[in-house]
Structures are given as C-alpha cells and as structure tokens.
Image 1: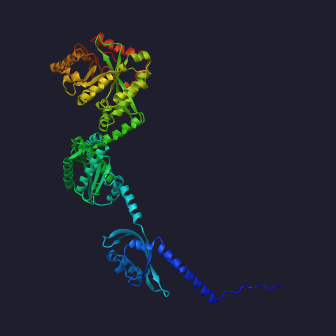
Image 2: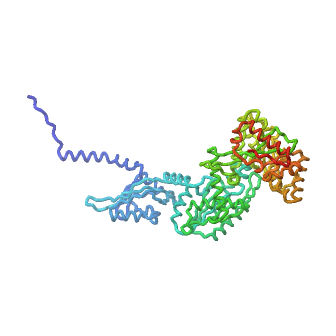
Image 3: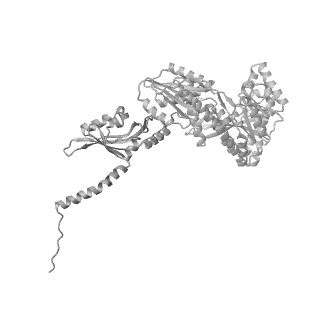
Length: 610
C-alpha cells in the first residue's frame, strides 16, 4: 500500500522570513506609488511639523524648494499668516481630523516671485504610535485651482451681462429676494437710454454695443460698491440703492443725467447726443411696497420721464394720477394684444351720404369703425383703447387687422354689390408711414383678389399727416397710383394751414365736427367752413362733413357746397356684419333712399337708415 505524502507546514520562523522578504520586495513599489499618487501627500513629524516625506504632487504644489527634514515654518513661511498652522495644532492636540474644500492658499512657487493664489481640497489626519500617542500629522489633498476658477467663471457668466460686465436679470432677481428681508428704505432706479434705436439703426449693433458699454462704465463709476447695478435688458438698467434716502437719490440721478448728457459719443465719424430717462421709486419695509411692485412703478415713472421730454427723472408714487393712468394703459395694452391673438377685433360701420344733386348715386360709402370685444362679449369703444395702442406701439397691428377685416368683407360681397361699395378705413400716421404699409396692402389685394383698389379709401387724420408730411405724401402717392382713394380726416381740428393740402394728394376732405357745427354759432363759423369749402373745391376735393347730430344743418351745408354728410342724425354705427347680412338690394335701397331724399327735398332732411 502506497503511503500518502503529507506536505510539511512552514515553521513560524520560515513564515516570518518569507513575510519580511515580501515586505522588503514591496517597499520600493509602495514608495513609487506614493510618489506618483495624483493627490499631494506629506507626513509631518512632531509638534514642529518636520517634513518626513512628500510626494511629487506636493512639490508641484509648493514649487521650487526642498522641504524634507525642514519644519513647516522654515520651509513654507508664507503659511504662518494664513491659519494653516492653527489647523495643524488643532489636529495634533485633539486627534480630530480636519477637512477643507477649495481652501484659498498663497504660495511662493517661484524664487523671489510674488505669492500665487491656489485653491486646495485638504485633509489633515493625526499619525498615531502603537501606544496611541499622536506623533505627527498626515497631509493629503488635491490642487483644485483650475476646477475652482472654472466654476467661478461659470457662476460669473450666469450672473453677469457678457457685454457690459454688469449684473444681469438673474442676479437682480436673487438680490431682490435678499433685499426684501432687509428692514429700512431703499431706492430703485429704472434707466432707459433715449433714442437708443437711432444709434443702433445708424451705427449697427456694434455702435449700439459701444454706447451701452460706455454708459455702463459711467454708471459703475457713480454707483458705490455694495449697491446693485444691473443691465435689465436691451438699453435698460436697474440700480438698487440699499438704505438710501430719496433726497440723496435725486442728487445721484442728476449726476447720472449730466454725465451721460456730456458723453462725447462718436461712432464711425458720426457724433450722437445721448441722454437718459430715469424712474425713481422708494420701497422697503416702511413703504409697504414689494420689490416687484417698485420695479413696475419705476418702469412707469421712467416712461413718464420720456413722455415729459426725456433727459430727466420722474419719481413714482402710487397716488400719482399719471402713474395710475400709465398702469391702466399697460392693462389696456395687454387687453389689445389678447384681442388681436384671439380674434376679438370687431368692425362697425357708419354710412356716408351724398347730399348734392350731382353726387355719385352709384357709390354706397361707409366708414369702418373698430371696436374690441371683452371675453364675455361686451364691446369696448375705441376711445378706451386707441390711446394705449398708440402709446405702446400697437396701432400698426390693430390697423392691419381692421384693413384685413375690411378686405374680407368686400371679398365676400356679391360682385354687383361690391362694384358700388366703398369702405373708408382709418389708418394711423405711424401705420401709413411705416416702410411695409404699401407692401402689406398689396398683399391683401392678392389674398382677397375680388377686391379692387377703388373700393377702398384710407382715412388719415390731419394732425398725423402734418407731423410726417413728406413720408405721408409719399405713401399716399404710392397707393393712389394703384387706384386707392385717400381722405384727410378731422380736418380743421389741428388749425393747420390750408396750404398743406398741396402736399397731400387726397381725394376727400373730412371736415371736423367742431367746424361743421360751428355754422350755428354765427357768421365766423360760417365764414371758416365756407373758406375751407371754397379751397377744397378749387383743388377738386370732395368734402365730407362729419359729426352731423342735427339734420336741420344739411340744407345749409348743401348750399355751401358740402358733398357728403356723416353722423348720428343719419346713421348710428352698427356691426358691419349686420348691415351686410341684409340682402345687397336692401342695403342699396336704404342707401339710395337716404341719399335721394336728402337731395330732392331739402326741407325734409335725410331719411333715417332704419
């Protein structure tokens, strides 16, 4: 029988020998790993913190010097005033580790060089002997300077405007949450550059950016550190002055106005005059105004400063009637935008009736009048929203919508009725003079191809036409060449000279109601209207007398040469759709009956429409 061989176990001496050999073999490898570790490490011995060992990453951090065998104070004297010795002492005496994240440290990394800022993640751990005594401190960590700087750059970009370097809207929102918790009074400035669009249009965006940068520099010089200065968007800036009185704020506002007014801004050889408009509002715990309320009020105050002539400031108060009106207009502007979005623009119409025997009986004329509809169907008259539309730049959109509704209506009329219909459509001066107006009208003609230009007469008020005489004249001539008609509306309300009529190639002159009704006040009123009628006839213009509320005036107006009349005495405006809902023949009969009666029997006056 074969005897099984049992392997002999290592003796304790053999085992210890092999362990010692293995440790000796591994020691160089461990030293190599220590030196090549990506984080910096060193061991400091005793209460004097003598360097026993340090790896390559540690030398990369501290720079040019040798540290082994030296105390920390001698090797890195710049650390004495930075608090790191105190942290080491605390670990050495208490045995509690210390952990720090992105700690700032100043190191002389080159001989005789200035101290260089770095940021480190740092851990101090106690080194203990076998009996538990603390014999030193082990230091390890990472140089996180690049990551820290990158994070700071990202945070800076997130809170600052890239063009001006000022705080941005996001930083302002964070600041607003903080300041609302601070007791006291604060002042909010809302600044806007006057006529900034002129610089942007003529000098391009580069010119506009240069102006914004220079004004930002002026504001930065005038606003003390500790206050908020932000670019709010476009050419608007916000300043929040913490614990500031209004008297002091107005003095600062005057300094800003003066500094910007005296700015010698030139771009591509062109010098521009630059001014600011400012809105100022006091807010805080003693004013019962939140930051958002103050911001809204300051916006309104800035707008009022512009309206009052620019290059000035306006202090906003909740009890200010101008501020209240502006707030109302802002709400109305939103109502208009909502109405345009949701198709709540409604067109009414009022007849225009010929009263001369030679008047064109074949034309049935009516003026289209805009209304807005509330969500519940309630109609809002134009006087309640047109001023807000003009203030907030919404007239062009509103005019274009009414034009399209007029073209839609004409397009749907039977051919025979359409041939004898002319719509008078009001157009604001800003719409008429807009570069795209003629193009827009031409597009409407193509879209509603049953409509012919002679079926449309655009009305523009005298004051709007005179304020942009050259542009208005060019626009009128351009569309007249296509066959459209034009009427100068509300003539006489602006007391302008009759010679302006030479510059405006219109076919109709609509005389303001005040002048028409003035013939009842005596010979002066009669003479004024007669003079207008004579000049208009000499220029081959047809005259429409507006706002006729007394039918007994019509015979006298006929004698003076007035061609057409319009007003409540003849017809109260009603929805255009209701007028057209009747058969075309019925509409023509009513128009014709009204016109024929007013011409054939002067003593009887006009026949009511319904």
